[in-house]
Image (cartoon, rainbow, N blue to C red; front, top):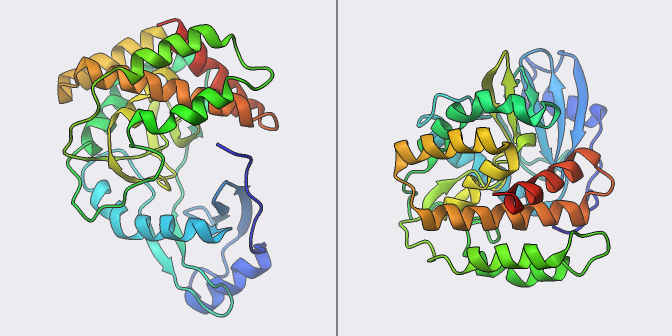
Length: 294
C-alpha cells in the first residue's frame, strides 16, 4: 500500500457540470458539491439523490468498467444497497475516460462509529458477505492483490515490519506464519468486494445502509473480505459475525486463519502508509491489536 498516487487529470465542478450538460442534461442543473478525492476516483454529490464518480488516473479506468459490467449482477444477489450505476458517462474530448453516476446513500461510514457500537451490525454484514460470496464466472476480473494467495503478500508484509514506528515484529511474524501455514484456497473462485473495511460500510439508525467502493471487485479467496472480522469489530462483534458467516456458508477454520492473516496484512499497510489520515491509521492500529489479541 504505497502513498496515494497523484491525480493524472484535473477534475473540478466546472468540468463535471460541463460533462453533465453534454451527456445527462436533465441532471446538469442540480446542485453539485465536491465530496472526496480517493485513491482512484474523485467524487461529487449531485442534488439529493446522486453521486458522480470520475477516475482521477488511468489505472482506475478498468475498475470503473468492472463496476459498470458486474455490479448489477452482485446487487441482485443481496438486499444491502450497493452503488450500481444509474447513468454511465462515456469518454469524450471533454474527459477521456468513462465515469459513473450512482445513487446517493444516506448514512455514515463505520470509521466514525465507536467499535463497540458496530456489534449491532455484525449479523447484517455477515449476511452481506454470504450473499456475494458465490462462485464467480470465469470471465470475472481478478484483482492482482486482493483475493490472491496470502503468500503473495509475504515480501511486502515483512518489509513493512522493518519500518520505524511499527509494533514489535515478533508477535506479528508469529501470527503471520500461522496464517501462511493454512491450506491455500482451493476454489472455485468466489466474488469478493476486495476492500471491506469500515470506511466502505455505511450505517443509518443502527442498520446497514450500503456497502460502497467496489473498485477492488474481483474473484478469488473470500478470506480477503472476511478479514473485516478484525478490521471492523471488537471481540464480541467478531464472534457474532463469524458465527453467522459459519451458519450461512460453512466457512472452515483454514479460511478464517487466512482471513486473520489478511487483516494483519491490511492493518500493517495502514500503519505504514496512513500518517496523513488519522482515521485510517487508527483502523490499522485496531486491526493489528485485534489480531494479536485473538
